[in-house]
Image 1 (tube, rainbow, N blue to C red):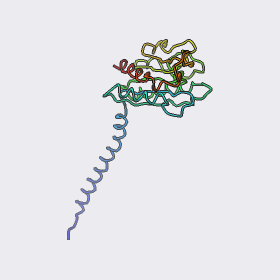
Image 2: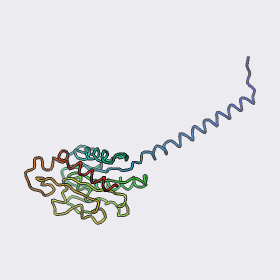
Image 3: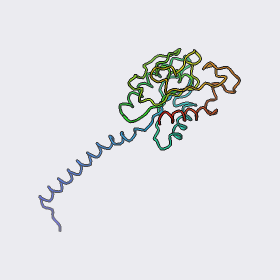
Image 4: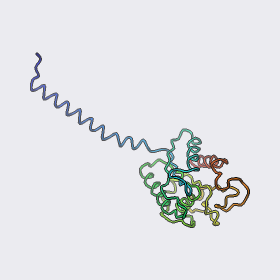
Length: 219
């Protein structure tokens, strides 16, 4: 019969304690490593249009796919701006949410570049975020100090255009902004006979054009 001395038991206990301590250290370190790994090269922050269900919406979803494809080997993440997108066109809470997302992620991920944008009322959200006045706007704009972190601004069916404005006039973001307005889209002030007007961005080639614009600005 094999016996275990008190000394052997003490050594075994010490080794077990050391193993548990080491394992505990690994458990503590893992979340920090995992958190760091979630920082993408580019993050798209996009606001959906009026009446669309929560998420990126009918334009934002294909836009993120196109940006991901166009940027090739770079990692791309996305964030859907959280706001009501209600018919009353009060978009200030969306502007604040867009700003809060860019601000918090810029601090957490110092190497991430941002692409911001929106469709329809979501474009109005973006207008206010970069300091362009629009009816129903408001909320907290993105600080000028973070402008270098925003590589591109892309909007579709922008109400500011229908009111005589343009996102390209933003003092800090205008040089990196583009807006698409279909012929026949009264929301952005265009008259014409193009079928779909305000509703045809997802299938008329402007999504890919926007993604290529982003690629040129990200570099």
